[in-house]
Length: 199
Length: 391
Ligand SMILES: NC(=O)c1ccc[n+]([C@@H]2O[C@H](COP(=O)([O-])OP(=O)(O)OC[C@H]3O[C@@H](n4cnc5c(N)ncnc54)[C@H](O)[C@@H]3O)[C@@H](O)[C@H]2O)c1
Ligand SMILES: [Zn+2]
Ligand SMILES: [Zn+2]
Image (cartoon, rainbow over all chains, first blue to last red; front, side, top):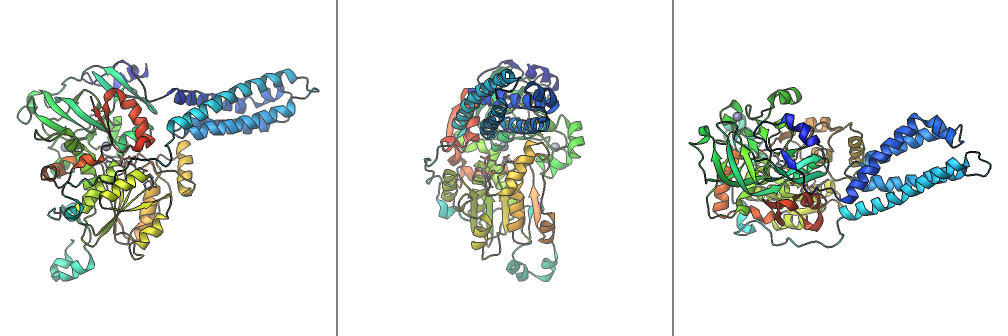
């Protein structure tokens, strides 16, 4: 869709998308992206509606805590949407732990809003499962297996061997606009007028 | 036709798109026989270079056969010619082109007005790159329209496989210019950060140009091994302190010449705290690039030395020790590569067997596997160094 809108920036003879094919994004990346945006949404809600959230959970007086969690949630979101998304998702898992611990303190029998707290807890637990799955999947998809690698010991790139390659292009003349100061010995060997000239 | 298309951050797709058409009398159409994924494509993949748009065709390292020629390109090109296409589009007539400063051609950027505003002055049009450099569709595709085709090409002979010639369009002249900009003397130590494809070409170039000592820095064992095969002494920055080791290898004087073949996405690790700082700022959108290598080079380079920066930077960097740079009297040379300035000479060196750039290729796949290969190349999986695609 956006690919079609952006066609206004293209000229008549430029290729334009007819049909989209397979993407570099795997299922794990898409899940990370969704959870990243979820974090941003939740973070903004916690920041902007801290009072209503605290009220709903009967946690009056904890508005600042809710806002702080909102900022934290925005952080998770930004990292989850970046190329370092595995860090973002694992930070979300840690954040889920913190959310659960905090909600547990309000999950008391004497809390008249205990039902609301229960619903919130169930939601966080559900999202935690998704976060753990996402974090594991993203880590697996993008990790580099340790230890094993192919050997490139024979890839010198010099068909005539490394020894004959050393200095093999000394015939090349550095263009005037790319010259640097020559080593001291070379400078002092030269005639004075040459020395005075920019090398 | 099929092409690899940018749809957003980390979202490259193998799409069906309309065929490119000749728009201007100097255009030509090339049927792509081989193309490659470049480290610069990874900066676009991560959306670190501003002004990419969904629907942009990727790819700026490609070669193939000319299949259609606009009337004004006819004297210089004909159907059936085998060409490597340089990633910098050049008019061949402006003041900069006449000086050989092809990557800052004044006329090839079709979005010159935007570039003039953002950069102060326009630079050349580039294939498969941001709309700041023209937003020209790239060559990770079956067909490519080449603007200013009468000058924007490198004719190559039959009988040499694509694999040996393809990199004339980008990484070979890029590594070469990185070394040439250092004006290497027989007594020089040249230190090269990054053993990706560009670093590998810079190592070979510095060796050919006769450096006394070439030192290569990275942390991926397979890339370090390839660097060593090319004649470099290697430093693994996960295991050793780069500055200490470079000083050890140079009688505490530091390398004469330093090359940054990493660019704006320096590896992030708590052992290099400035990279964590940069990454955090980058995520918040208050710094676009991670300039760890620039800081390290300025610090370790011998006073009076040269810093050569082929590594791509996209925007704003923070905490560059300008005082050190100034007091040490260092020279910085940088830029997108003036590809055509070097290619006649480099083609001759390939033909004479002085160098065979195909050593760097580790993966060859079809276009439809391209999206997955972006991931493999980015994540450095399967010992991947360079991916070639066959449309
Ligand atoms: N100037 C030009 O015209 C031009 C042309 C082509 C590519 N480039 C740029 O050159 C750069 C390298 O391209 P590439 O294809 O080799 O990419 P690449 O991503 O394959 O290689 C980069 C290498 O740098 C290493 N690295 C990361 N942090 C490091 C550190 N702190 N110290 C040492 N090494 C470190 C990585 O491990 C990797 O091997 C990119 O920025 C690319 O955009 C510029
Ligand atoms: Zn490139
Ligand atoms: Zn020009």
